[in-house]
Structure formats: C-alpha cells, structure tokens
Length: 233
Image (cartoon, rainbow, N blue to C red; front, side, top):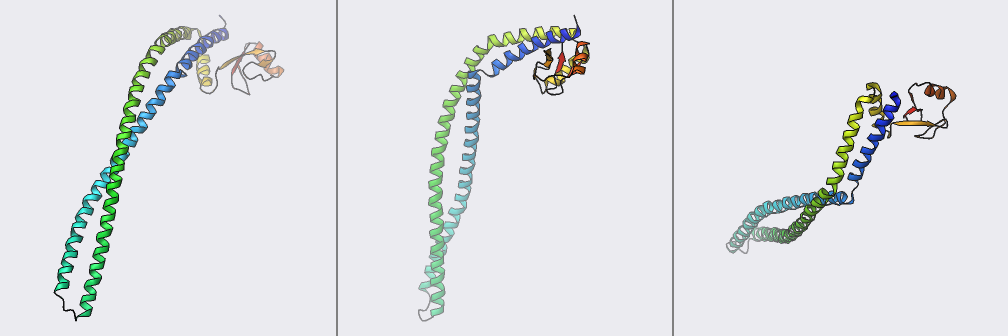
C-alpha cells in the first residue's frame, strides 16, 4: 500500500474513534452529571464559607461578652463613686457624670453589636440548613445520573475500545515520520490530512499554485499554507 494511502486509512479509523469519544462526551446525561457535580462542589464551598463566618461570630461574641461584663462592672463602680462625692465638688461630679455617660454609651454599643451577632448567627444557621438540604438532594440526583450514564456509556465505551484497537493495529502501516507529522498537526487541526480535489486543498478549499500541484502529484509531502494540513492526492 502506498505510504500516503496507509496514512489516509489510519486517519479514517482515527477520526471514527474521535467521533465516538466526542459522542460520549456530549451525552446529555453526562452534561447533567457534570452540572450536578459542579452544583454539589459549589454548595460544599458555600457551606464551608458559612461555617467560617459562624466561627468568626462565635469568637467575636466571646470577646464582646467579656467586654460587656467589664463595662457593666465599670458602670456600677462609677455609680458607687458618685454616691461618695461631695455634691459641692462640681468638677468631680461633672467628671463622674461624663464617665458614666461614656460607660453607658459603650454598654449600649456592645449590646447593639451583640444583638446583631445573634441575628446574623440565626440567619447563618438557616442558610446552613438550606444548603445542607440542597446538597443532599443534589447528591441523590448525582448518584442516579451516574448510574444512568454508566449504563448508557457502557456500550459506547466498548465500541470506542474496539475502534481504538483498529486504529492501533494500523499504526505499524504508517511511516514513523508521517505519523509524527500527523500527530503534530492534529494538536491544532483535525483532520490532519486532506485530499487534493480539483486543484484545491479539500480541508480549507484553498486553490493551490501549479508548482505545488506538481509536487503533490509527484508524491512529495506538502502542507497547505492556509490550514496546515498534509495534502495527498
């Protein structure tokens, strides 16, 4: 068999194998399966983010409760000091009143932040439960889709393996340098080999000059300057 015909025969079977593989990848069930997987991963990430937020609130809440306790004790101490101050000492009374006012403001600020934290914590708990339920339902759907896809693809995978075996059997019929060129071109252009038809590259329909046509007809390997494919007669 002519070396170029051997290459063409190899490509014919190789393209068939690629078509079967693409059909498996484009399966609607596979696409749903991948979408379900991505959804579960997104929910797992969201769950972790919420847990981190709750942990941050818990840590801040512990600090705030201690600060709140100190503020309460400080306010009580200031009130006790006011009872022992001579009412005629206006400067001392005014200073204590100012300190009491600041302590009360700080106390209200701590209480407000603490209440907001309790609200945020309750909301995060609701979100966690919702995410957990969504993830559980998605996992059930994913498991069923996986079973459906495995059943659907079983026959196709067997067909693909058989086709790839035919491709493998033809490798030895192709000269090593042609095979290397074929694989190199296939990385960016498929199919890598085109026929000469009516003075044109059948891959991109580019008309070829007479000098190039002569080379092809004389059995010289030529690559199309437009699409990069190997052109054979």
